[in-house]
Amino acid sequence: MSAVKETGVTLSDGTAISDLVPRSGERRVAARVMSDPEIYRLELEKIFDQTWIFVAHESEIPGDGDFVTRHIGEDPVIVVRDLDGDISVLLNSCSHRGPKVCLADRGNSATFTCPYHGWVYENTGELVGILGEKLIYRNGIEKSRFGLKKARVGTFQGLVFATWNEEAPALEEHLGPMRAWLEAVLGYSVNGMVVAGPPQRWIIPANWKLGADNFSTDNYHTSVVHATMADAVPGIKMDVASTSSRVHNFTDPVRGHSVAGFIDPGPDMPSFAWLDIAGQIGGIPQNIVEELRTTMPPEAVEMLIRTSAGAGNVWPNLSWIRSGFICAEDEQVQPAVSIRYWQPKGPDKMEAFSWTLVHKDAPEEVKAAASRAMARSFGSSGNFEQDDAEVWINIQRATSGVQGRKRKLMYNAEGTLDPENQLPGDTYKHQISDDNQWHFYARWRDMLDQ
Amino acid sequence: MTVSLDFPASAKRISSADQRYGEVLDFLIDEAALLDQQDLKAWLGYLDPSLVYLAPVRETLINGDGIGLATGYNHFDETFGSLAYKVKRLLDPMAWAENPSSRTRRMMSNLRAFELADGEFGAITNLVVFRNRGDDTHFDIISCQRTDTLRRAEGGTFRLAKRIILFDQATLNTPNLAIFL
Image (spheres, rainbow over the protein chains, first blue to last red):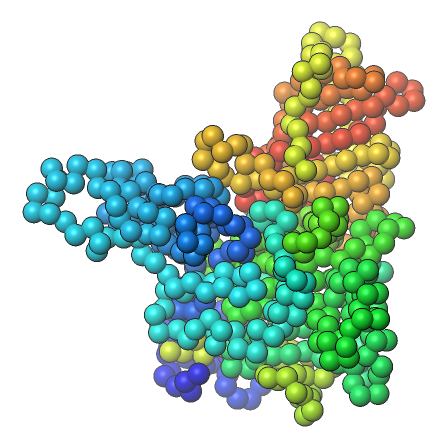
């Protein structure tokens, strides 16, 4: 990664980007980043147009011609699987006069036809048909110049990312040490995970960063916002006084990715003793936990324990949650995994996307049980997420006025860097600290300050 | 699981002139009133212990690809037990999503009633819920169709045994489903 150059980008009122998220001194973020339209447009240009953005899970487009339509920033894109099994991400805008050429959320097609003048594109983006070509373009026209604009595509552990930026590092480099965490969360079963169905989509009238920030993660809010669910998930009840917690947080201070609350067993704790907690918090099915107790070599157990990582955020706005959930009296804990995405829709609104992921090889009833538990716990009607959405909306409302916009938000709870950390990136001791979230905003500042 | 928004061909339509139509209508009107009054405990009494309560995710598909009713993931995926759990949570003052509560007004109409097998009744209704919170002048309009199966209960009334909710949006324009439909 190249060193960040402090170029001193300023807003139209003279405020420097580095005033919004300072490079030294107190860790405070200017509240106006949540509502300022000028900052929002800079985000679209300097973040969403420049880095790798999540667009789909591979299992949403398994076969030849399968597509879904999504957005990168405010640009509509088609995410489509072609005959050779490759994935294209195409700007959903006809090269001729601009309308969308694909109008459905999901479907299957070998070609896309513009509804305005009938131009036809292969699902790999090439322009192959112009209605009345020889009559209209009497001097000829080079169709090869006018295909749908194609983004660079990268996939990792089933996650499909795209970027318009030809200069961006390869996806693997962008993810960096986050790859190991994504492997641990998504890749520990032989044939991996697939979506249970299409995403829930719903509007939360709050800035997209409030979702990404929360999943970066905010471990502090769980016992307050989710007080009603304290008995439903292990780990919700927070021991504020504990400073010897074995729960650490991981952050990549340069790339801005973070992982919340993995358990560091330490040298004096028998690894297997943590399997139960890892199983419950990590959302690993109990039968697998039992198997592992007898069959797994210690190094693998240690990695699995680290998969207790219950939440995290891939910079900038792809999050996950994984846990075991109780959704009714006298019911067993049901493990489930969700990936989610905070789609910006203006400075004061986001469209939340939530998918449940299930193990491809799990029996149908296990898949259905996971999908059900996640719908009941997170997502549009989720017992947890209902309250989160409410808080984010309140932040948006309370920080959008004249005084509100002048405020600074506090991210100065500092954890202790773990000097024995063997993992790439930084890990911080203590479950509760603002380090992960601060690094999210630091990355945000660095990208806007270019 | 594919859900059905309709009833089997053997179901007999009950005319609005039929007394039983009025009984079904009264039940659904009373249920809506309980929810608007936020009497969630009493609302549970309207539900059958075997209740299946589903609201499938919707997608926009090209005509011919279907109406866009997803299988495999739902906005609501509930049983009596999980709804009772939600009600218990919502009655806790720390359920911030609904404290202060939303003010809602359910506008229910277009009832089509059916006689089903085993003495059960079918009801398809349109529902539009007005939802407003706090001092916000913005309000949410949540529109859906409900396909219900009602079972006779003691005293001649009913209990809701099944509800399939067909949302009229693919992206829901409400920040959470902390209210019931």
